[in-house]
Image (cartoon, rainbow, N blue to C red; front, side, top):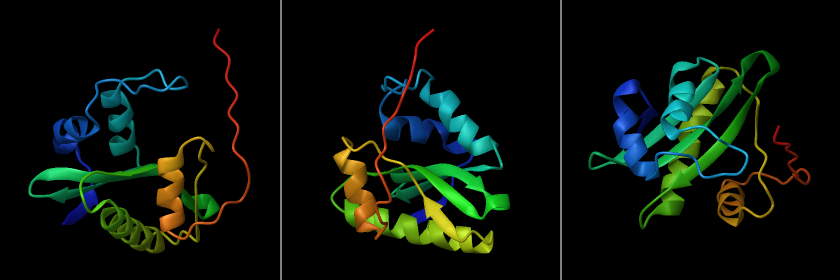
Length: 139
């Protein structure tokens, strides 16, 4: 398995992996393509992909706050029979990336209803630090 930073050339593969053209979340009203491009192009963001046999089998993305010494994980996902192994290998790769940038803390927020993401973070020995409740208002 190969793990690396996604590039513009990976956009088509990434959209195929995600399987949708729009992010289907009440709080996100942007297209996948625009979302992924923002993470690939912005130097303060990251979007890593795990590849096996030319197909994406996992992603990890988020934001870098180098000046504050931490990285925020937006999402970790994997597909296939080796989901746990993929998630662990991607996280190890990400930790090495963070160490090179002198980042000392990795954090994230997860909606308590998102059981799949919670399982992934527990698998990575991340500790729960509080409750997450989102607020929004359409105007």
